[in-house]
Length: 152
Length: 152
Length: 152
Length: 152
Image 1 (cartoon, each protein chain N blue to C red):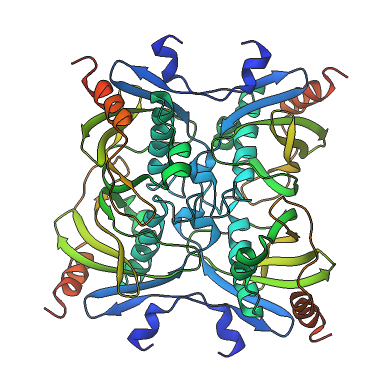
Image 2 (cartoon, each protein chain N blue to C red; image 1 turned 90 degrees about the horizontal axis):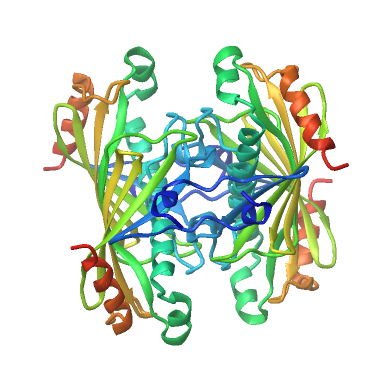
């Protein structure tokens, strides 16, 4: 690997309709049971969603500045299947599952190669500064629709 | 408050069938949106469950040493209603909802006084060292049953 | 303990010139070595400093809104002596060590009863919105001076 | 980028005597001031050290299993120069500064391109299971010496 590329952080990307995001488990992620602490999978999933939103070309910061609106997670249903461990290389695989006027459902699985560690459905709602649901920008809805239909 | 009591950390406790656990939101709990980061509610809920289990008299450490078995969270369904903020005083109210042979469901609400911030159903399974479900110790089941029926 | 007091979070306080703040080690604080993760002592210390500043009567939020200025940690020198473990009851003991025009040094020790776990000197500077040092409000300096001289 | 490489997490590496490790700032890293929370730089630095140790070929896990000994951070002196922000791409640049019989000093700087955000000296001691200093394995000392002398 050329030296200068060491200074460029990892970015995930799409493989068809699936967004892939890879990470390594560090000490900060583990707990005294020797496994990944259960809340930290939500961190892994949020990193993947941030990366996915950037890859899609949605500019959340500009929208927040312009309209005061932003995505907020309103619901997470998560199942823990197998524990992750220190040093594991994991993959977060995310798909846009359903797009509604003011919210979107994202399916996220944390994999260790072919093994499923955790899986979740995350609902993100588009909220104004007072926390009320707003219609998502049309261009974003179209982007999410396009992704969710890719490969079907 | 007498000086020596300052050195004794907070403990929650039961009010009828409800376990109450109070905490304050510090900088570590917040994110750049100025609100409590979504994964951190799972930390608040785990603190409350640890306190509840201690209050009930379940000795998880002894059981782990003796049999290699311990509780692990296998499922969380969480809804985010209102954001918590820096300096908020919050209460985690937990009730034992259902007790099965090898798992238990706990309802947890994070309140700011009378306002509901988040609510979750958490399923904790009793697993052996290989991650297989085991029957919970009979004394623990009786304790959880007794709590869940209190006040009904 | 009367039930309603369960809903009031812990607050620390001063014993002469020493601010005392107690806490319990939860799973979130530990790592795969079975001990408190080294960065988390900085969380414990920040909780204690936030509590100390509140106890002193400094209204950081009002100052930030009025002048755009706030305290920021600019230096930490920390030594790790003994590991903390899951379930430990710890005390953070903080003293104001030195008060300068635009910064303050705070000594902080994390104790487990009479055992010293970690000790640190933390320098907090009063910075404006562009990150430039500003004179601390005179009333605050007087408060910090008064505390640091108490009991000498 | 070929799809399969998306599933491989980032690894840092050496550029002469300097170990480089890149990362992106996510929501989990920030606080209500809108900047990276001060304790989280210690997480970034630990990720970089873990990566450096792996790159050097030191097998900590095997040594821990064989002798019960492992590295523990015993001292950190850290200075905060400029704040990191959400979405920033950062680089942790680490050099082995001094190698002693049972400990090693590592200099670590967190950079945003050419801007210095934080810099620290971290002392890691090689400790046995009871927390007593032990001589580092000779092969590791030689590795660290070799790195620290590279490029001089």
